[in-house]
Image 1 (tube, rainbow, N blue to C red):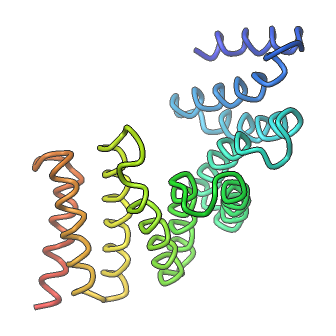
Image 2 (image 1 turned 120 degrees about the horizontal axis):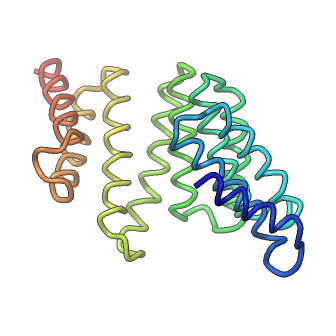
Length: 213
């Protein structure tokens, strides 16, 4: 797959006419994704950075297409424990998406989820909790607005699960149990009873019940 994309990239760079001008940055991003899927993180990261530069040169500095590569870059920084840098990149993606789509768009909620994860890893559970709740509110309002109903529900369930987990960490056991039970209902409706995510949520509910009782 990398060889195919590299060949496409050479063609786009040699023939900078029509759509090739715009496809170059997207192709670079796709090469990064392939490296990522292959576990070659050292090769994926520079490709995402290159994709950002190329997309900004062609689409414009604050075009929403740029945020796709920004988010992947932020995820890579997060995986490398470079949380301050990851937060900066995610906040940049958030700013661009809010300007492009409005503050109540699911694409904004996705970045908020990433930001919340960074806050949690940086030892700021309350900031993470507030940001997860922002994402949840957007996702719940947007439910049913796309044709991917099950995927939308799973996004909501994931966010609810994250909120519940943090509430366990800050010892809000009753609140944690309530929201985890909401997450469980959604997960079971989409995934069934035997999925790992369902079992993890049940385990967290048991933990909340043990301390709440």
